[in-house]
Amino acid sequence: MKSVNCCTSPTLRVPLKVLWRRALPTGSSIGLAALILQSALPVQAAWRAPVRARHGMVASTNRIASQVGVDILKRGGNAVDAAVAVAFALAVTYPAAGNLGGGGFMMIRRADGQAVAIDYREIAPAKASRTMYIGADGKLIEGEGSSTVGYRAAGVPGTVAGMDLALRKYGSGKLKWADVIEPARKLARNGFTVSHGLQRSLRNNRDLLGRYSESRRIFLRNGKLWKEGEILRQSELAATLARLQKNGPREFYQGQTARLIADDMKAHNGLMSLDDLKNYRAKERVPVRGTYRGHTVLSMPPPSSGGVALIEMLNILEGYDMKVLHPFSAARYHRMLEAMRRAFADRAEWMADPDFVKVPTSGLIQKSYAARWREGISLEQAARSADIKAGTPVGAEAMQTTHFSLVDAAGNAVSNTYTLNGGFGSGVTARGTGVLFNNEMDDFTSQPGTPNRYGLIQSERNAVAPRKRPLSAMTPTFVLRSDGKLWFAVGSPGGPTIINTLLQIITNVVDYDMDLQAAIDAPRVHHQWLPDEIAHEPLGLSKETQSTLIAMGHTFAKTARVIGDAHGVMIDPATGMRLGAADARNEGAAVGY
Ligand code: DON
Image 1 (spheres, rainbow, N blue to C red):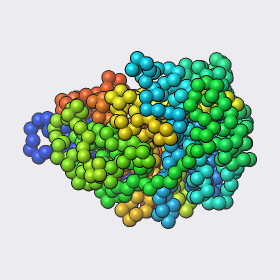
Image 2: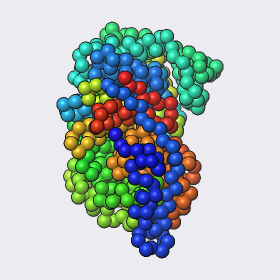
Image 3: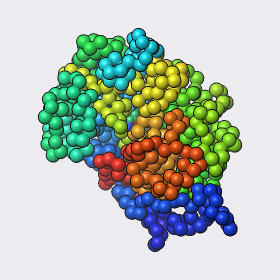
Image 4: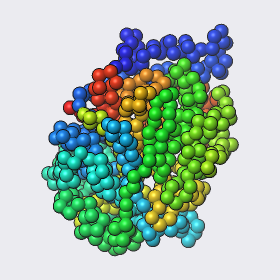
């Protein structure tokens, strides 16, 4: 366990004052340089401890789903069995992002050290084309027919195929497909208690859900909005889950469910056909691997940009002595922001589906490439994003996604992020299935130079093409200890902010000795190259830190917003205890046994 210091936050081994003193240049007058280092009023004085358990731990955004995972572990299931059950449960209890009609990435690390990335990202339907979201006036289509709303916004879902692949190859074999679906089916049939968060998110999304009759009926009760404490039952979804149990994953891609989906798509001018569903395949990929101060980082490779950009930023930061900087100081933020700006410029230029374009992954994650970026970083002055162009590597809020992390008694671990993209995706529930559809097509470059819903500018490489996967930022990750053993699993939703959330959590742990809960709860910032501004959280940065960064040339977004909803599990190396850490920003819960 980390040592507890008497006079400061229990999670920081070094008293804040000492960090400050170390950070001050000796004998300096208070010029900008000194101010940059000093301006670090701690914004969080109290910290929560992680949840502790001896055997297994599940951390997700929803307590019911976390409990489903723990129940599977207690029945002898391994981390993958439990992860699949959690994913199905979230599809019922967290409909904004938990899904059957979306896709995602599951990182698995077995206790024997074997690591694999399961890519169950959605793909574009065969009839999709690069200009499909551009209207006759040359502008991006809005509303129905756009990449964000309605039937044409949906990519072919990968979740059911991904869960099947994970369970078949990496499950314990003790629990069958039908067993891991059963808790979800029961929750859909018998209902569960609507939480404050669910009430709020349904209300916030009533315009989107109200456009489509099935979504309106199920999620808005035809206008009589669901209230906290009521029981939400989803009978069509329960029936779909029962058919999946009986007929296996083929049911979703070739069975009655597939026919219901294809019919509904056809009736509403959608592009997704029965053939598209039949041809969907989840894929195994090799995790992208980097190191940060001796710790191995295993993360999601393309078609996620997350792992590559995360490692690129960690490589840039490794060249600085970060430990001497206060964790909430302008000096630390400045170095991180400059790293973010550059990695996101590379993301925009280079990254896309590796099955369609060549992505220079190995060049982007080289330490020497990061060193070249570092040469151009001033420690006193912010760069302008307009002056930053992608490098040449060798080889070269109505939003929701959700992440959960698990570790079982044997030390197998899962780090899974999946999504419908926007909260409740495209808003469409396919008639007769209870399945909400994603709007993942918006992660493609609909029109080069025009930002997508996350304000991201992306390149031609990520243009829409039949059966292509849109570029993602989802970054399910493992960090290993220097002896090669698993240290923690973590990930987050948040579109492009995901990558920077991971950067901050990992460096909070490695550079500042925070435990995982403190590292997750600490305030976050985000910079994505363009727009050239810092996204920041309410009460996140002190006024002094902000003023110092502004004096250095940084620009802050006008309004603050909450960034991410990260959930992780750490193994305490001294005792082997599982330490669960759910983000305070939502309704998450870590449950162990
Ligand atoms: O794959 C991606 O990068 C996005 N579709 C993720 C969306 C997301 O995280 C929304 N969450 N809050």
